[in-house]
Image (cartoon, rainbow, N blue to C red; front, side, top):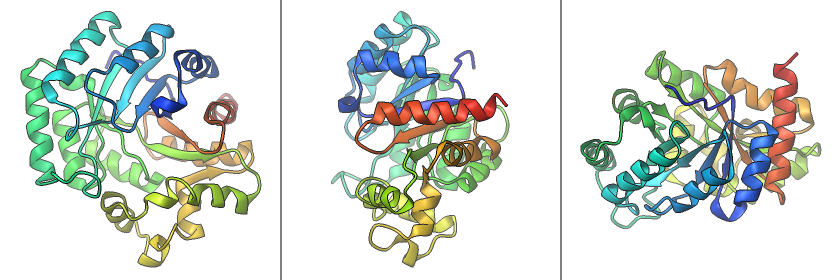
Length: 279
């Protein structure tokens, strides 16, 4: 792949980022800004972020196959790729059965969506798939450049690398909060994803595959589970939690910032990781 994604990715929703703050993310040392949730098919905001920055890669995490028409997404991809070559990556995902009333045959639906993108000329090497389970990971391996999972641990990263092998991208995201008070950090995490997303079937099933129990998943999560999903503490704690994914085989670790100031959290995480990686 001729796109330089960098070791760190920043995960932000549209309301958390502006063209101006995207410049801050770039200056903080991030190689990629992942536009989270389900961006509309025109991908206009992703293009604005690219226009405002100079080297930052922008990706979608992820375009939702139930809400974004494949033909429109493909046209948007070609428009952006022509304007910003080697700076855009299209992440695609199946969404959640709890949200989409039309949910049915998720694997076949995703295969059909990838077929439509391919027919419209979107190259496989510019696609990544939000894959959690083994079957979806194999699809990511066979039909795209790799996978961009979230709500995962370094153990999932290790397993994903085993499935995808070398030469494919493994781009996990990890929740992060620079809060030295353990109980306060856990409380913040429980009031937001990951804590309030544990009953989402896709995530819960994957966490059970990783060895977490019904007790871990009850309510807003056990301490053990929250600590596994969130890097929190001092800079050393943030760095340990995030670089564990790189050590497990990730090409990049994405930072999902928790707390009231996501850009400040991203800066703290980048400072922590880049400091330890330069030693």
